[in-house]
Image (cartoon, rainbow, N blue to C red; front, side, top):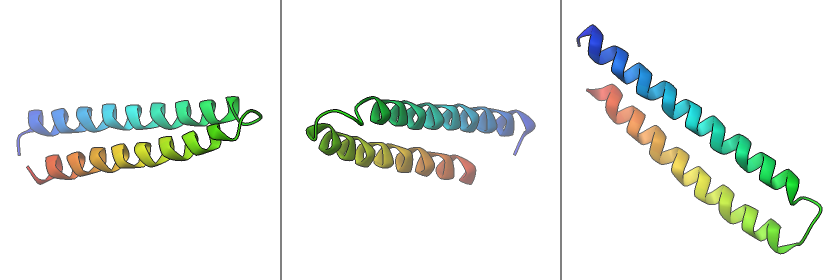
Length: 69
């Protein structure tokens, strides 16, 4: 593997990690905002957490596939 390809993979991985952290912090912020409000928000937040976990798993699969090349 060439140095350039390795650097590109590392750069992509870093950006995905930043996106992952951003999504998590945003989710936590939203959950804290709506913590003291309606019960449907709890249901909505559970749905959002499930969706976020699926997105994170897809990102991790993409990283693993890139590492194979």
